[in-house]
Image (tube, rainbow, N blue to C red; front, side, top):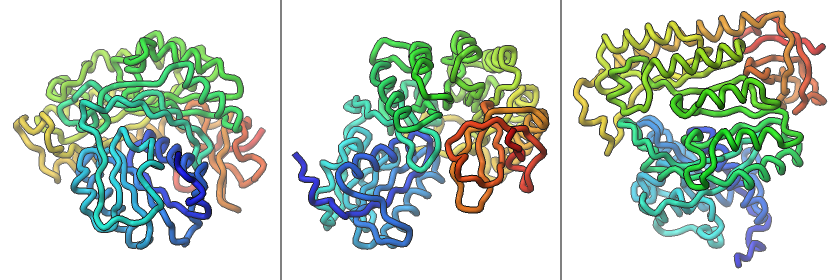
Length: 438
């Protein structure tokens, strides 16, 4: 039994890099430490504990992780420093040797952080505590809000896909998940705490049920019955796992929003084959058409990677032509990054950094055009908006069911409230539509 009395009046700082799943897990770690008596440090206050949750999706992400560790150890020179997340799992010895780092926790250890921080007495040298990939089996539950209006419910972890460019299976382990009963209970608790919106997160959420014999559709149907939760959003889901049955259910669901995020990665079949993706452009186009057939106003975000090994200029042009013809709302554009140990390194034809930048800009411009047109189509319509907390005297923002960002005059009473709004023209920086409460 851990004597938590030693943590009373201790303070912590949390820093997260990467995906929504990481933010959810950091928030859960924060809750565990708060229950043990460790409060979040105030702005400018020197912390007793620093927790850094890292990402390793690209080489740039690795660099940002190292920079964050160096900066936070300088800002909190006497703090006990814990580093966890994907970069920590992949490069534990490298991270443990960074000055100021005390403990590096792997994928199976982060949920038990209290067992590794002792009395917050700093170590002479950093200690790495990780499990080999084959031994990562634990599903660590997480349903947390942090400082956001919406909750993030982790339903699945790990990935069995091993795409040629990706290190996530090595960092997160094999696909595994919680049970529907337990996840529903977490959603019910979020509702009791006043939560109205939950984002369903994971590494490969469409693969849900691998360890419990259930299905993602079963989970969606069960969550839809939780009273008090007005909105669910499905975060990134593989196109081959987004079944027509899921799309059809969402279209008539009480609480699942017409909002999808689907990774494409490339609009060229030859490149998809090089990536070892499990679909082709025909299947992807079918999914988009199915969504739009049933939910014409649905927001569809799409991940696209540029400059991967083997992506010739002709292949890129083919991809752009395909994406131009898709009725999607927004592109999340990433430049390919060489990752040690991945099969992509065996593929010939390397794209230069300058060419990656050029290709990224083409797709970012296309994304801006598609998003602007999508927003413009909704000017003058009425929508329900879930309003988020804002700084004093600053405009408030919220999102419609189909994820249009709306700007509203400041009113503290609107925080976390669902209100009917008439959508007006774009705001000054074109990041939202101005809303008028009806």
